[in-house]
Length: 137
Image 1 (cartoon, helix red, strand yellow):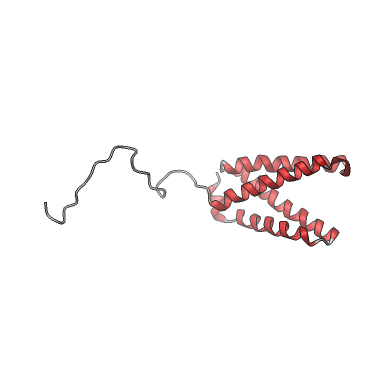
Image 2: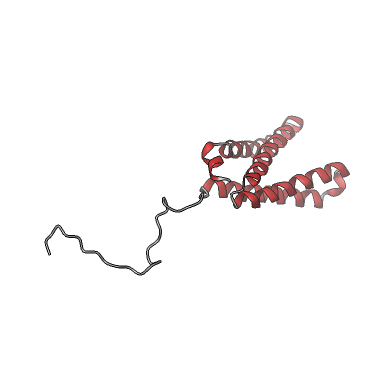
């Protein structure tokens, strides 16, 4: 054999990992998973808070907050499966969570509401990107 000849080794099928670039189907970005976990935590925390302090809420507000939290939970699980409807529900959840915290800041003037509003607005802007929209079907 000369030096320029390449020696080929036969490997059994399945022993080599397929190329990630050539694999079929969309892949989730790390930011997408982090946003889903964050929104899962936020919606569950809001639902638990409303249930524990239900005497302080009007009945209509109680049902409104619980229904929005439920929709966000459903959206998180749809988004983790890379479904377009899950992405839309999560996008709306991020926007309205940011809007709600900004409204609470303007009503109470407590600066503690600005940090979650800023975080969820950054997550909203991340989810609107073209790369994210292309990954959900």
